[in-house]
Image (cartoon, rainbow, N blue to C red; front, top):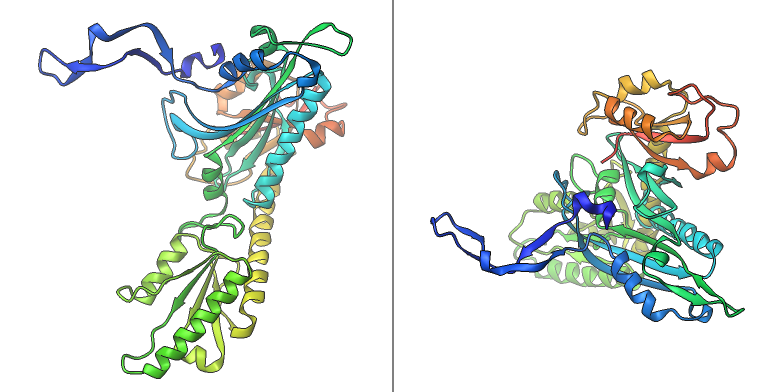
Length: 425
């Protein structure tokens, strides 16, 4: 909890009362708690208190717990979805008999998070380790995935922590190994939150509204029927029959479909509404289309024009279009990530680019991959000078030894890592 001291919300009274001076409500002086309550900022203390009761033998390990929970951290400046005082997140906690098992588990979960971001949300990420000053409180290593938003700022999108034996020792969690000796357990914790909704919005959306990847869109296809003329009963029946079959075919292909048949909203307003809500594919079907045995496709992004599709091919074509759109969004975001990373900058160049950068503007590469000597003092100086932080030490380039033989771009001393710097939300 010490690492969250500045963010903890503390409950000191159990009720309010009317102010004697008539100035509204105040904490009732007679309702002060004997022991103040700290609203949970994270769940390690609760989980490890239970691990002590559950773990006895090496046969109990590894023990893995996953939960969804709300936590609270007292933020001075909030941003919707990205940084809120209370938020919902998924968090996992594990206990292991060996350090190797715990480290592998924390890395595996980071891979799971990266895979989920890319395959479901179409958000490419950089995997890496946090610098010592950016690690989770009590962790020996914090692994992270970092995404690049359209304005050139980074967003920490998920973390996984190798806790070492710190929590095991703090809560006296021990186990009897195969030789009968008592050992301290090794731990991990990992989590992602509703921040990923913010990441999705800022990665893909445009001035027209939301853009949702098909794999996570609540509505993948919206069908907008264009009514037949008022007295054309035959046309109405033909349209309804074609509409029913079209929707059945789409649902039969496993697609999530919505029919917007509101008769009090104009078609143009419907198109605008569903574009703003980010629905990946719109299908228009009118009496003339039915006569031709066709309908009209319009994707949210990726194509300016419309496509005429035979009614018999709708489900197959819709599936292909949605798959292509998912791939298009990921490819576009990957190009932005690659294009937004500067690998040749000096510190002065980075400082000049970032110190006046504003969150609402993007005027060039926002991430800087540079040789760096791990130094908490210099890291803080850079943060003060241009608001940039070490987002991570990227796994791939550091495992490849890219920092060897290079000088730190800030101190000029021998580099220990390749570091990814940038402004961040």
